[in-house]
Image (cartoon, rainbow, N blue to C red; front, side):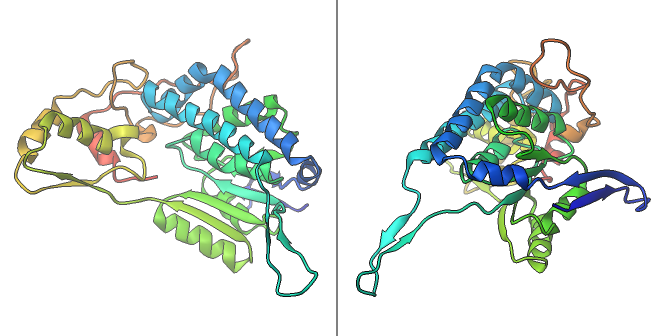
Length: 333
């Protein structure tokens, strides 16, 4: 299958890397019985569960999530593996009445082929699992382009899949900024594109993918949410909800709320109470909020120490102020 290049945007003649969309591995995988594919996905969930604590620490250090949220991120992937694998023995099609005598109408599912996936940093293990496990069960191959803010988490997820028995070359990882993602969206060997990110970028991805298509396009884009505070509300609960809603995942998710509305005027004491809640380094167990990953440079992980299962972020996350965290909420998933 053809290749595509990632180039230096300042010097287009400088090729950073050449990447190949692996079609042969996908065709071999598509011939594996579906229940057997499901067994590999179950094993991937087991591998992730066995390394949950270590992987959660990596998520916390690389993208700023507090440990409890980082552990939930990994658990999402474990649960998704079990759920998707269960579909491996479910109905794979249906029969319908035919208007023609002595005829049987039935449907089944066939692999698309190779799917390009572009994922954000805010759920660096969960979102790849939402996309990759169903694609694998259906017999597809994957080229994953993760956020430049969470490359180590993506490496760890793919490593877990490989350890579980996903064939070599079936999941390929492409790192970089916008250039590899743009090339992936229009590559003739990619039959479908799945993107999670901002609305403006999603529009560009969809337009580019369909202009050179036809191909399937799946978009999961940012949302706008609000919190309504009633006059009889318990302000302690309001503060807890406001902090979690605005600053959970450092405010970087599509379910965050950018504004509140009240029918009375409790916002003054609510804001004052919120300001007294500290922001600590995300790896601190009592921490309730953490910094966005761009609060410090996103470094590539150092080589794995002997015996360590997952890549380790080269620098630990740094604490941020409430004001910094508030400003970070303008950048959504």
